[in-house]
Length: 257
Image (spheres, rainbow, N blue to C red):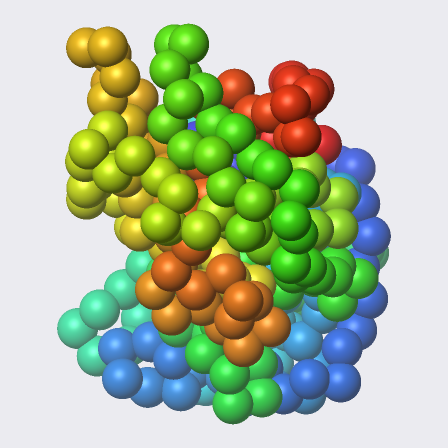
């Protein structure tokens, strides 16, 4: 639980990056039970990049939350203002829960997003966090030529693309699958979930005897807002060389940029 304690200490001492109330109906499903159903959820940005939903202790179903005895690591901490808690329903439980009692997060509960099933209104939320209300995803068709190289070998070249622009993130280029050298791709077992785009599957890239894991991803059934990227392939910019109309794309040191 060291990582959870570290997060609790940071937030109790420094407070969140920002927070705000939301009028959305937010519900949590755990072990087949609705453990909360609230109009009083709070967006909490633990850092600048995306928010979490925090739920008031009073909004939970009776007897599903239990405060845990302090661990020695927590007792030795110089920071107070939070408790470790446990969520129980039926025969299932998770201890990835924090209860805060600081002025900035008074009586708010943080549950690891992957520990329960979340709904915003009637939409099942995918991914490791809820959508940021200030983030926008825009998909635009583009005839600019995208060439992908790895180890000096061209692995794809397409002028029938969809460019995806997402607030605070670098552009991603979704290529026509007919313009990719499929013999260089091998299916990966990796699956990931994005709050804005849906469930992604991956391919590994094998060139000149070198393999790069999960270098390519695609969405079979993206969300409605990202529908134009369905079935298209996106090469992980940070793992390959990308040329736009023959000009090499600038290398980024942080995928969020």
